Image: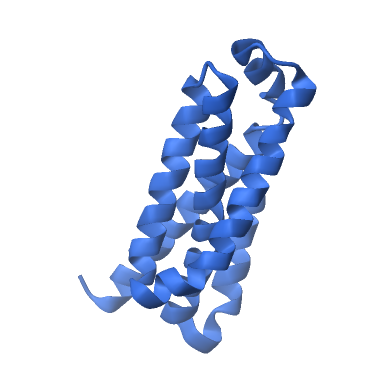
Length: 143
């Protein structure tokens, strides 16, 4: 595979993952009443899930620099995708409040790694011409 095709495949994978992760993050709010019913707690209590996801994202955002220096950006993105996938499956399958919060934390941790890692990968691929790919990445996430 030549360099141009490899770049396109990488960009398609990053764009697809950001689109899916945007859907996942946006889907948590409308499912709050479902989570409350399944775990047996009030809707207000399930709202803690947002705090847990945000705290986990903040934690991974603080760690991403060291992780990328020690490993490479592609490995960090793989870790991010794994965490988000585990978090999504956990949110869908959890029947206890504790498991719901743990799943939210794992997913939130992966989301910030994915965001930072994806941006760094695009900058490393495109260099000074990375503005358009970065904007398209965030457009897909916000869809």
